[in-house]
Image (cartoon, one colour):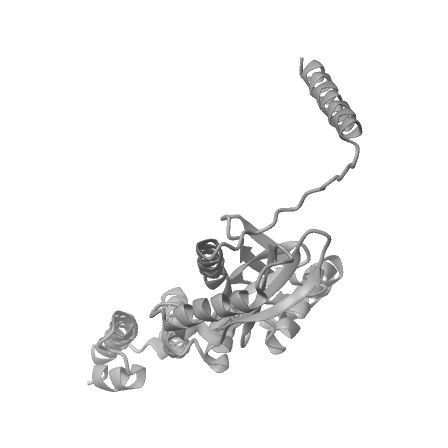
Length: 350
């Protein structure tokens, strides 16, 4: 009789999580019914627990009270956890929206907080049922809390900073962020620290109180700029046409095309150096998609330039000397310097 209303409450009995939650609540209810049945049977046989005297009666009453408190706490916790898990599952399925991402970030922390609060409440009620005065315990806990607060100011500062970061929606789970000289994907959020997974595999743990500035690369859109060094005499009209053609190819690609917000386009000559003209190219994509597209854009543009006789210019120093003899002397001097440097390095290595 109770299973069907519970299933309707959870709205997920067909899932494994829903079945497990319903099973936990049913076990708690059956346990409660068993305890009630035992005491009801005892009452039928003339044994009234509330009227029993002596150590046995007191022990049975205390056992009954504590059992009821624990069972009610267990049922309450199971229902709260299932409600949070259900909302969390919906938020993860709706992860593309800002609300879904924020819920996916905050709900795990809320679950931990409610767990601690519920455990404290159940323990206090159970102690009160045993006849223990909880007033002095609460007063002592307050004194201990003040002492811990004075001795752990940095931890409290980290927790408060984390609360404000989350309220300001500075980042979500899965965002790619930069903090100081550290970069990575947000992999874990606790009450006092943030865990970043670097693309090389390392995990950075950053206390919230030490985060002075945070850059989020996973919001709304991402702009990527590319630069190519070409000879100054290059036909810029041809370069613009090739960039446009490659942009059309990338936009038509079934995998990368949907990630574009603005297609690949040429910015023309951005600046001129002594031996090269710097061509600018840019595109705008959805967050976290720019790096894969950048790699493919480099690959296709370089291949297109090579196919049309446009060679990229490397960085170097060109020395022009009108006197051939002077040029030979300069070359010989540079070669001697290079040989001397190699000899010194070999001697140091030995």
